[in-house]
Length: 259
Ligand SMILES: C[S@@+](CC[C@H](N)C(=O)[O-])C[C@H]1O[C@@H](n2cnc3c(N)ncnc32)[C@H](O)[C@@H]1O
Image (cartoon, helix red, strand yellow):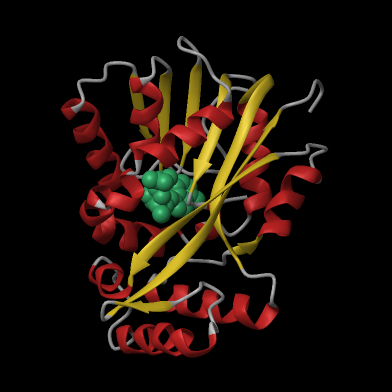
């Protein structure tokens, strides 16, 4: 089935392409190393990164001697990715403009298939996962990395409301258990690695493109969360700044024979 939110995705990520590619949090090498480690791949392997954005994960793999392919729905993101790979003089990368499902690759083509910070933009994560699994070799590794919400339904709803206002291309952030269930429904038990990404409210808002007139609502919700943690993000004041955390998980599992 086709993805039905591509217009809003391309609109948002064309606007976000430069700021996103320069974000220290998104460039964080330690976080990328953790994801590469979870994939278990060795130099010489070939991987696919789905919804690769400006190519940080692909370039991380390529710098460690892995042949890496990145695919993303937004041409402006792929343009940024090409620039990054050129700056780093990485020859072992390939880029494609394309969607997460269906993927334009043969069955069993890659030693690992990864997807970072995109499941919350994808209307059917199950279909995206199924395509990642299809193109992954047997005993290859499927890695999904994303932020997840609080298990408390009111906090999860508030967080998603705030995020959809901040970035209208967000479909929904999932609870940790929901992300794990996507693996489990495919008969896989993922390993889990956790980290947090703190953001300062004004810095994040400067890099965001909410619909006209809605930035104030985002600010109100984050400020309210300092008082009652209504977003479930541990929002706090620090030296006059408002900081809140995205809780991130890296889930990884080997594709089983016949899977
Ligand atoms: C938040 S960015 C993450 C980029 C990159 N994975 C990273 O972690 O640096 C989300 C990316 O997902 C892409 N995207 C969203 N929906 C997509 C889809 N259905 N198919 C392919 N790419 C998609 C967007 O174009 C955007 O580049």
